[in-house]
Length: 135
View 1 (cartoon, one colour):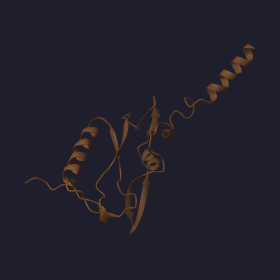
View 2 (view 1 turned 60 degrees about the vertical axis):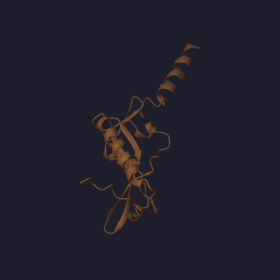
View 3 (view 1 turned 135 degrees about the vertical axis):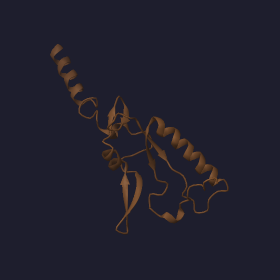
View 4 (view 1 turned 120 degrees about the vertical axis):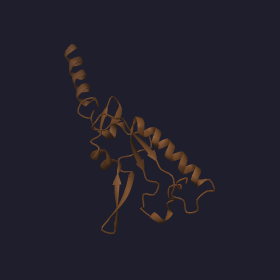
């Protein structure tokens, strides 16, 4: 009976995520974020090339530590969904963009922030620019 208990305990330890998969960043992704989601779109040689969450996490050498996603320096990673891809922007779009900039600045003080593009297709025509600087 005790050998069966030891065997089952050993099997549970081997199969548990705290073992070999503990560093796998996918296990710590927040709800609503998948490794295949598009983070950014870059134009290379006239073609739009997408950058996925998985690629960005690999670039940052991210890992899962104590159930938190961290970069190579141990700084916690947070995802932020950008706004600003409006075909016809709302009346208060400048205030919305200012609020977003303020939130991002605050988050960057404490976390490594991965900004999720508002337009995974790469269509630049729909993007609102940053609010104009106050003279």
